[in-house]
Image 1 (spheres, one colour):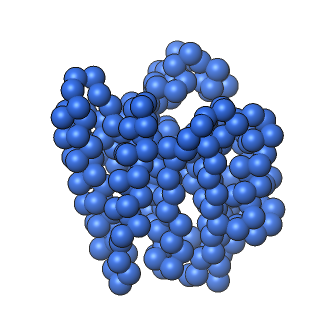
Image 2 (cartoon, rainbow, N blue to C red):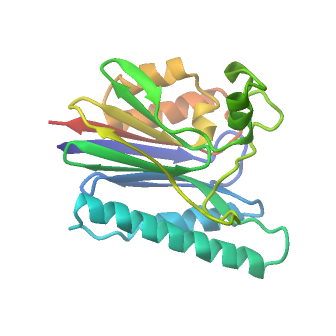
Image 3 (cartoon, rainbow, N blue to C red):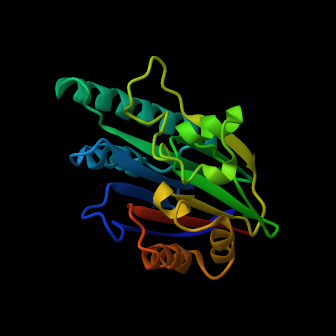
Length: 239
């Protein structure tokens, strides 16, 4: 398979700086979005370290080697962020959400931690292939709240897993599947999917070239005065 992709990021209509980072490497079959957290610009440190680690990935790996290298590099970043946070004093958080898409041959793998998302548009239907690591998602799973009430919940921004967040065991969730010519993926930070509806995302994801779709999504979010950083990476599977 061959791939073409496009990406765009913006600090949003309210924030003065952007703690989102992205990776867009179609020749390698590697894309990612990281959304920094922690306040006092610590989020920029976390997402920046992730982007640096993945951006330095050399070509020439097999699919299995590429997956192993991504896991290794993110685990190393996680350990470094935890150590840096401890050195800055108690209650310091230097963390980032992360979604990674790896494509090779006729298969893909998605890795993630946090509430940044990956959507797949296949045969005219779009579905979210990641599952948020968030407090509201846990409440939905428990039946305590309805899915439609999640975004308006007072704890909607509380994530339960992130790169750099202290935990006894850190693990990236994983989902894999087969690729079909014409499939399109959207990787995005939560600023986008909490501002535009699934219907809007699906319509835009299926319309035009990937290089223009990401910016169109950013523009649509800005038109709605998005109050968070916003990032979109669009990937299309070619023949």
